[in-house]
Length: 450
Image 1 (cartoon, one colour):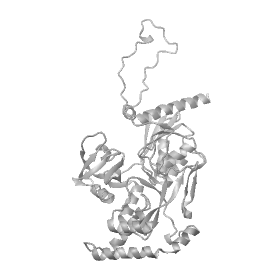
Image 2: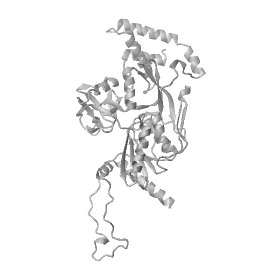
Image 3: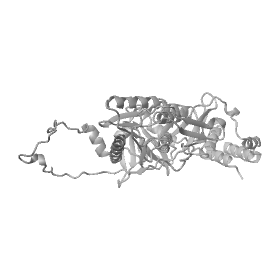
Image 4: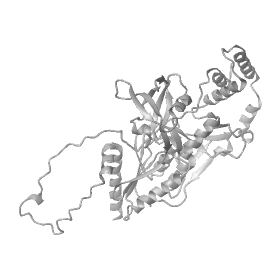
């Protein structure tokens, strides 16, 4: 009987289908200074590691030799061994991967926030490429590609049977060059064809907007290395636009696939005065970490609503879980993705490495959200609301000879929002509900002080 690792390795040799998934951004710990050979584990694991499964290794060598001698085409040793490593890692979980030179570049791009392509996070589902989420202000989003869409063809080439890595490489290319995508979209009876021009994707991880007088909106699209400092700048921008003080803030983490763990900690820290933010636990010493908030709430306790959905994963869930456990914000929307593991990049040499799941993370109350997700305090599904047109009411002020108000007739100034902001809120039911809730919380807080 072959061991689990050996079976996975053999499947990697024979099929060569294992690739690192691109459908989410892993929570990445900083690269450890300790070499892989020196990483300490438990005594039991050490004893187990010291005894090599010789029978399984013999089978591995036999399969290796038979492929070398009998496969229809000649395959060199390096290719077979690299395929074996990929298969061994892919059998562990969806996030562990063998990092070859191109994968290292991809990892750097995802954490730096700049790469070339269409601007979509994708995964593999039933042999097709599934769109997890389009990145804001990218060709994909502007073309109408949405979360949940299935890509079935790329430039008339079916993706069925194609590896995720090959599909991603096809979608990337020189800025300005077109690619035709054939998609299956929910609610459509037949596939939809779209031609999208590739572009240099520069992801601004933090965006702000004033929703109403004293009410700010911050969206984090993904957690990059600089997101913590960018978040602080966004808060200061909202403060400058609200000289009377911020009454409340909406933090939008919808369709945020995650990213760098430290960036999530920095964001949560800026909103908490004290207490645990997140802790990680694994078998090696470097994976047992605790992150605690430092004094100072950047918005001075102003009410908060955090928006999440099924596209909110990993680092997004760390922030939402911390704010929820500390009762610092109300979480609104739909259940999050449920990625509760942390990956560490372990270098093998200058070009190759492992991205290995080394820990699970836990919210301050000790919750693991792995495969469960963050359950919002208030469930609000996406919806389209059509407002009914109503005739203006006949009011007291319209009566001839009506008594005047002793405080005056008013200055006639309108308190209406900016038209572009009003249009955004009108199209986004979850955002509208969050703003209404935020205003209610602000009124209650003001009443309590009064």
